[in-house]
Image (cartoon, rainbow, N blue to C red; front, side):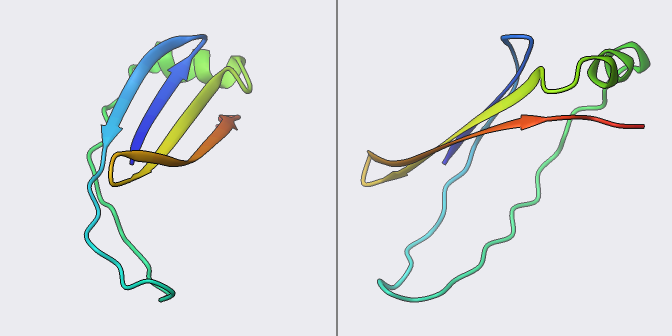
Length: 78
């Protein structure tokens, strides 16, 4: 899975996850813990003042083939 985060069309974060094999037709859950960069106070202020300008694209691959693409928009509040 590759996840891209944009703010006002500028890439601000990129994550690349690798998940192990899952038995077909099984139900599984995953927990991914990863570092998130600290934002400066001016960045936080800009995020709050610009609702839905922070967006993400998540791409899911199986055997190097894209199987799903999710898009999300974020509204940060204080």
